[in-house]
Length: 384
Image 1 (cartoon, rainbow, N blue to C red):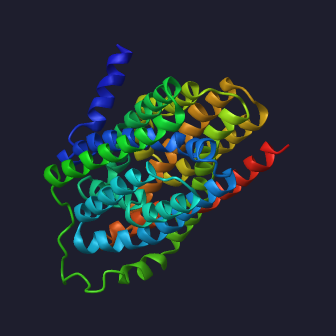
Image 2: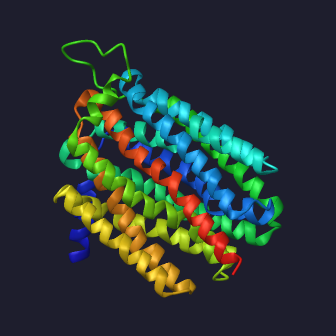
């Protein structure tokens, strides 16, 4: 009886969303599955196969993130001026092209060049900002956390499957040959998502009231950055995303090269991250809708701290699993949903895309710093 009530409450919590929310759930599943074939093992490939030092792998990730900051700052005003859908399509097309280019990288120069191109033309920040703006457009204020959580579940089904598939495939074949094939698969799946969005998604940009939209699309950045509440949210977001990006990028290399975890098991703990989201994201999002978004972000910070402390105290696969699939995953569930919901609630309708893009840029800023630090530290430890 209790289980039935819980299931009924979960069903009622996600019922009645706009069709575009459900479409984006499916699109995110495929998109994140494709990314899951690339990101967890890219650092391993560039370092272990191509021989690029870990510190320089971190520089490439930082170049990508730095370029993503620029494209992310542009994405918000552009999505407010020209619509959510054109920005999504531009980002997906650029993402597919650069993933394919990564499959053909042969040296450090090529790796750095493609990293910059990926940040400028295929930035995940651009896609996520425009997608989140569309979700906010078509969802009532009191239900946005659940809508963001629902779309995130779709993405994490992909994250659960992608690293697992990539891990088992790489473990079954020659790493030097398998990894570029995985990257090509990422590009192909991204193109499928692009065509699906082009055909199946209707624009959601709210109609301007009272006066026409500004002929200067970037004028809204100054107005947004004068909002003190938004600035506090952005500063908090940079700190929290720093913890996330450092663990996400460095942990696969740390697990493989220092703890001795094989590729297949790396795929397991990365995939377990997605499975936890599938099980818990909707109830957590429902709770966030009913409570303080600021309090939720504080709880997320405590969970990130618990994850880092666990990694400090253990050097085993089980410890990594608890830290990453447990505390770390819970923290990221809270951060993504509460942060985007708070940004959307703070935003005037005409600047909704800009506010959400600025919050997504927190990820890019953190991504710029953390890989260099993590790569340098891992490189230093490998010499001991």
